[in-house]
Length: 412
Image 1 (tube, one colour):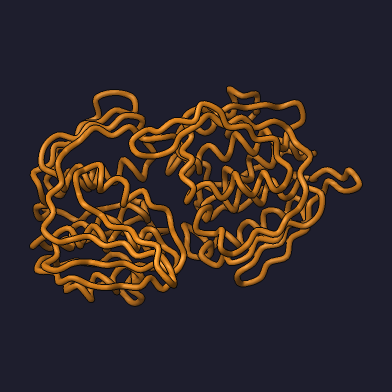
Image 2 (tube, rainbow, N blue to C red):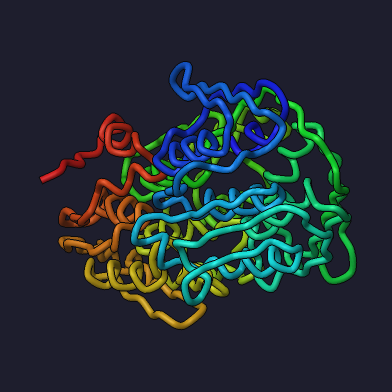
């Protein structure tokens, strides 16, 4: 959506996940002057004018943390002023990590304490920058690269640990030249200034974060087997699948192919006897959104699963580390929470099933809600969550899809 709006000409998109975050991003691109039209299920047309124009009103990004950070990066390269806001959750999330490098490039911001929304951006006349990420964040990297398209000098981003590279791949699809080098101390991404994007055709692979829920549901529910077709298997996003296999999961990948410059395959999960493992901190960037559902799988494993280096979970839509620990404990699962680590004591040893039976507080976090509903499928007693409407943020078809597989999820 963002690159199509920045590009000159027509971009068509197929297979789009039409969650609230994406719809908010579409509305934002309209506000910045692009023509954005839905033409069918998951099918969209974006006509860009080769740049952003100044929006007439405040840009409300709802709950879209990725959306607002990338949009700010894109908008920073143009001579305009724009005010951004979001829902109560997004207004609590830190934006300083993006504002810092963009400010170094010359963008100006008027923001609340801590760089939180609502804030106003004044863009244009950016200089190049050589920026080292202080944390593993594909969002920050992407914001800097998008701003760099319209900077007056070259932009270089150094990441100590490789993060998901969808932006680099997508920039190439729109005609940009992006140089990626594995160097001592990390990966370096460079983009030359003054590049112009051209509209193109994009087929979006299946989201691994969404696929994780029915796949883990199959792993923990006796007698189950589920195949999810067309799942993105980019190695910088496949940390969950690697971890589940280490736990003994019966995961089979077939029909490997390339779609839109990304590796894709059909993933089948069958009920499995899982065992606890230690998940290294270095794997966190490849699966940071999947730790809540991994914790559910770990609850049904034999022994302890230790997830290290996941402090980033505390600054997502909620403090996901704390909420998962609290929800699992309420369902009778042994957990230990530390600042950067979550340990889940699996119940499989001695054949003691997970009790469940709790009503889980989600603080409006869609992944916390979906993860605990999946846990309820294999627990002794049903599990309830508050604020289920937030699931539509990322997975609007979650409930009917899961019920179609044999689950019994109902509002009430």
